Image: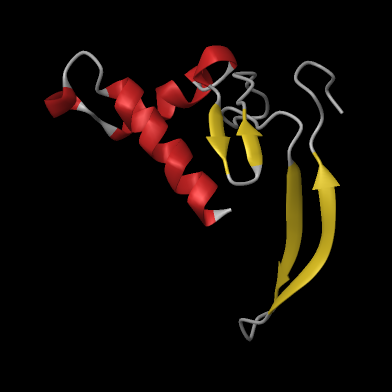
Length: 94
């Protein structure tokens, strides 16, 4: 997942800097995340990363049909696996 996260960030940075690589900003990169869909889908180690561009509840682009690990972090710093959850396809709201 770390590889996929870095690859996705790099893809958004490239899009944000298409017109002027010297003028890439955090906001510009954030805005380009929703462009990572369709022909701009990122092909990571976990499979295609297609961000919906659907914004809800103040959150940015959401991954489409991805398995997400649910982890529990204890006060002592121990990480425990809880479950795997499948995200809903874009537009289904589930």
